[in-house]
Length: 328
Image (cartoon, rainbow, N blue to C red):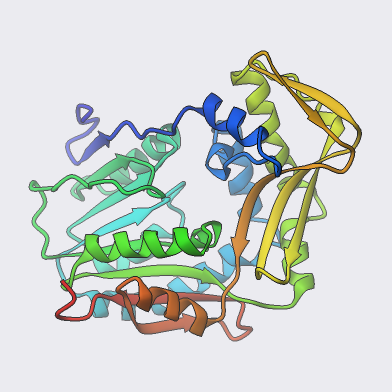
């Protein structure tokens, strides 16, 4: 654990094992369907680009979820009750969190994220804005099983895991089940989970959200190649690849790829990889659910939906989930 940077702030660095960026990239590029994990999007530039995506007119999830939180934060606070420890997975810049904090008045706040630099910056900023409020940042890979610290220095009675932003859609079905099962174990029968879930909708709305006119999402996707070039001695020709995002009807998900515009050979850390024209590197998925589909997945993982809030257009949903008594 790092030394405190303020009276109310501490960083718990669990030294998340990303595997090795190099090993993961070399393995992913060696597969029949080349791929690189989306968790490597978020270097400093990638994090900035994602924040810009959230402000785009085409990208409805962020503004829709923020509106839902403003409307229902008081109900959520009443549901969870006093002296809850607010634990946010994938906290990023924590833009939605103050809405919940102001409504809940939690015993403390635990942002959890893989991007150490952004986590430290946003958590310390929040701690400085609320000098009497305990903030305990945790650097960890929340997509993998990990053990949270005990937080014995905070007087809390229950836990609320907050997972906003439809990030859960970046997991496939098995990964979603495992993640929700871990969340159920973290919160226990006294706690709850609050999860943002993007809903199935018109394909054109989805297409535009991931293919914005300004090309910000394209820059975000292509930044992954820049990072490989910079950190792994890669020689990707950035003009030889383009952003390719589409809705996969059969799997009910957006898929993001980097598409090779020509036959070419790329070197990463002295290893060579051949690309055919039209071949892709799969970088991300974003699964879309009906409310019933997501609640069924949650139930199979040990979580029961007690409340769900959605906007009038049915674009987005926020689910309040608890562990049924007798489940432990």
